[in-house]
Amino acid sequence: MAMVRYVRTIVMAMMFATLVKTYGFQFVRIDGESMEPTLEHHDQLVVDHVAYELGFPQPGDIVTLYYPPDPSRIFVKRVIAQEGQAVQLVDGRVYVDGKRLDDAYVTPQFRSDDDWGPQRVPLGYYFVMGDHRNDSSDSRDWGMVPRRYIVGKVKARLWPLQELRLF
Image (tube, rainbow, N blue to C red; front, side, top):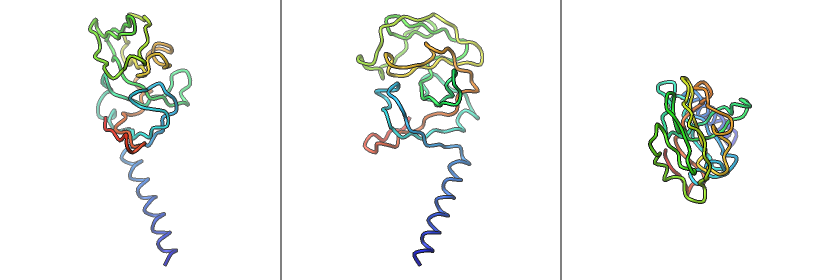
């Protein structure tokens, strides 16, 4: 009887994994601090891979992407601007098309004081940043991200459980 339960558990797990993969969800673990305070080192996330098959990344979305200098690595960043928009940082404050970005999610200890840009995002590209502005490798360092490098949209933080959050 124990063997039957064991086999049934394995079959159910395989079916669950197939459903998750089929419908485009992936579980990802954060390695690093570049998205603090929104996401922390070792948080477990649910990423929707279908979201951008049907639509486009929007400013404010938290996304997984292939790291442009080394596409074998996956990064998690926030979309700040999309194609055609102009981005500039002045004293650590982000401006998109001349308007200051509402980025209250970046608390003072995570805000840089650097200047960058202005630069217009080319067609087919996105400008992304980590929420930990003074400790993030992002578009300020390695440039714009091609649309094809954006893998999926972060939908939820599952772990730690007490920090469960939907995005």
